[in-house]
Amino acid sequence: MRKITYFAMLICFSSLVFAGGFQLNQHGAKASGMSGAFTAVANDPSAVYWNPGGLAHIKGTHFMLSSHFVSPFSSFRGISPNIDEYKTVKRIFYPTNFFASHSFSDDLAVGFGFTVPFGLGTKWDDNWVGKYLALESRLQIFTLQPTISYKVNKHFSIGAGLVFSFANVLLVQKTPQTPFEGDAKIKLEGKDNSAFGFNIGVMYSLTEDLTIGAAFQSGIEYNFKGTAKTEGAQELINTKRLPSGDVTANLSTPFNSAIGIAYKINEDWIVSSDFQYVGWSSYDVLRVDFADLPTERDIASPRLYNNSYVVRFGTDYKFNEELSLRGGFYFDKKPVDDDMVSPSLPETDRLGFTVGAEYKLFDNLSLRGSFLYIRGNELKVNNSKQYITGNTPFNGVYNVNAYVLSFGLLYSL
Image (cartoon, rainbow, N blue to C red; front, side, top):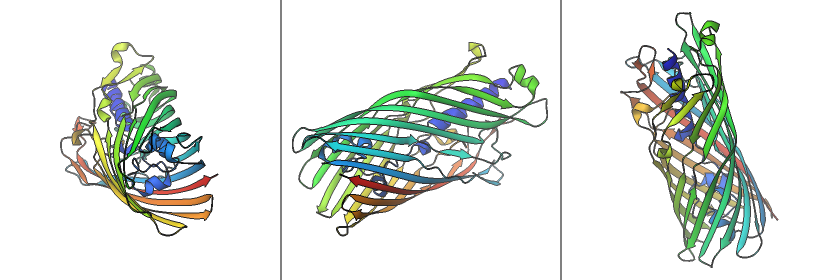
């Protein structure tokens, strides 16, 4: 039972951290309103995240604050051939980001950003059919990004920044505690208070109306340290048949690269498109070290995810001097094979549709908002490599959707 318990926790841990659905691309209400097709636009302080090369084109001093209210929902029908339906507990997450920029001259600018690139979770009922795979999962990653940008000439600009990050993770699941009755509940918490990466971006104006942009954000390696706590039969805990005590795990988030193009139809209307490539396969092996167990009892999992991509389209239309309207859509390819999908975060191909608006309250203060609807394609798993008691494959049907409401303020000096 010990080996099964530890391996189940490892699979849950790896699925949580590397799940595409836990990656947030909400970094500013304007960019969100354009479905993230912002790499070749990057004309507000969120360029710190989207494309540092855009900062050099932003004159003056600007401050931007955005909050995003994310409501994800998942359901599972199974285990096949059963068609009983189970639903995640409704929850709202509210990642917030802050950006600032300042230009020292026509060519040189600096910026700073606080972002939440990962920050969601799932929670199922305590006695649902997949309780031995996942009950509650949550991942939060925070970053601080000082950035500098320089305009080489009127056509070309470049920018780069250092990323300082800290993170925490929570996992809860149940496991049988044979020969005792009932189940044990295992809670694993960990954190890393200092991790580092970088980002870089360029923008090039082919004409006055046509711009291309490219950006790269490095992956970041985290060294999580935490504890495993178990509620169950004390005899099983004392004899190490149930996990407890200190644990460590080293893992890396994927790199993100993007290339975009933006075309100004006229002075008031711009359309844009992005191709985002996400390096999920940079994850080779996830190792979990139980400090109070012999080395041979520590476990490792092979790579579970593949490189994936997101295709984005967006538009921004200045209706009048006070009001701008936005919209867009995107397709997000899931990074994991069907047989490795886990209920800790069900992965499906996703479509996202956005609308947004901005209203200038005063000469130096604007209010922004956007709404995003995410619809995952129904996924039927027939040959799952996730197993519950008795080596029963976790086959069934997943459905996923989410709503994201964003608000932001832009203040300019």
